[in-house]
Image (cartoon, rainbow, N blue to C red; front, top):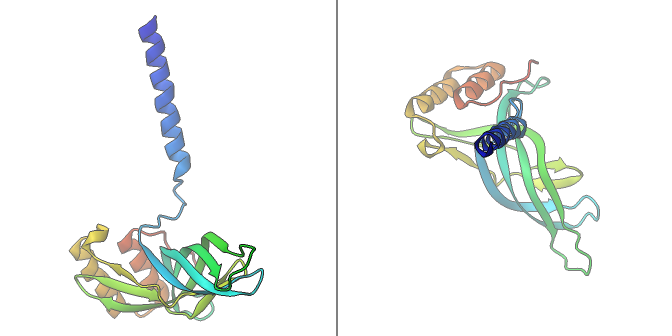
Length: 182
């Protein structure tokens, strides 16, 4: 009797774990495999105070801007803007996973590594203005990407002229979600 109850409890526990795992990471959720921490400047949305931003950028995918045709990088920004002026009231503001897109500047594409950064001076997240210039993402074999994929990335950057096609190739090679159709 006790063995049968233990077996049922074990099956229920296993089913619950499987359900939690399935709910925790749906197929459409951002993978955020490639993340870069950065510190920059910001302006708070509520008080308009200048401050320092400490956070991270997690790559979601590459895409082509439907209006300009320019290659963009899309990612999630996490972090906190802390005003420089000291006051009794804490005017710090945080962003948690806000999705943003910016033109991408690919600065290195070889068979050994792939380096890029959002090419923009700032972006507005929930009214907070954050400087993106210090973000730099370097992908190497440490990110779990095999050497052959870097060669394919370098070839895609160098030979594929259409930004939409380039975005699709980059996303496929890096295992990122595909670009939305324009």
